[in-house]
Figure 1 (cartoon, rainbow, N blue to C red):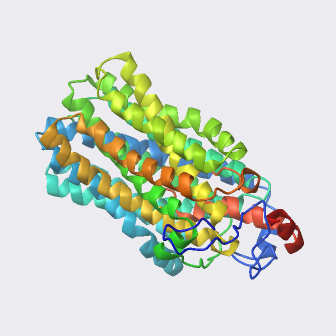
Figure 2: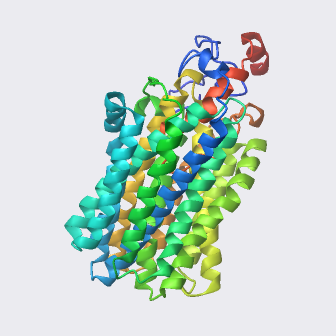
Length: 468
């Protein structure tokens, strides 16, 4: 595992999901957790492909509604005269709801089932959007953002459960890639939709509510085919994860904080900079386009060379671009190019951190470790706008970029220290890059972990030879 930072730590052989065998005391059977070998061997039903695309359609509608709702609130908050600090609190409400939802949603699913939970949460989220239009008050908006975030965390868990159940060992990696693309594309399309109507009216709230409600149709129809079984996950504490891979903990929190600033306050920055609605829409969608365009090139590079070195390089680029953005005119074409680069480095960073964590985490701990990373990343996303908003109020709008740069700098210093003083995992022993969507739950990691366990089993002797 990656060596912790304390001086007395000893080096322990790493375990690589998908390349190496489990360590000495780990089971060597593919089905030892998350459903057993029968789940992996089961043949998909004839309508599995149709069910997958129905779920993707529902996910796309949810993400478009989500992106539109967040963009409208960001623009409208400034137009209503809310201070930057108040707007930061409003936007952070989403991440607060997102953070506390998973444990409660899992209990709800166990009690009433996936379909009822999805229907209830989608209806509640749709209603929360409409309440924004009925009561334009900071307290109400904060509460509704909290409710909206809570609902979306649960909706993701349900969709990811169905995707894991309907996909097969051969297409799970491809399924997760599509999940990431549709999530990011839907979010970007939703943000761009603020240009189709006046954000100061109620029409865009209605459109967002309708989109969330429509997601019920394909998801509930697809879900009727098969009920995902309940799979217990071994929990991994933050302290335990630090023992395995401290870089993953630091990187997950800081990448979440920077993403929280971007997703929460980009519309606020654009509005305060005097951009038109059309230009604001372009400003918001540019990072999403960058994320989709650069996710795979960066990921493929990290499969070929030291992943820690790639993280270091990506963080340098993200931090430099964030600082450069403060020197560029907000209404210029160059700003859109810089925002493309910020999104193209920021969002893949979380995927790199997830993959790097899986490189070092024991095979039986992977799903639990992914769940812990999700909570850490969500905590960072909550803290990010709460820190950036007051700084924007005190020091000016450019603090929007400087705050993101500060979060990247923390990762840069920490990873730089690790590179200088701690041994890296050989690139040939790294796992395959995981295009892990931001705000996805630990359920999504099964789409990668399960087929790996089914197909990548190496004898203990082979591992010992590799470590010589």
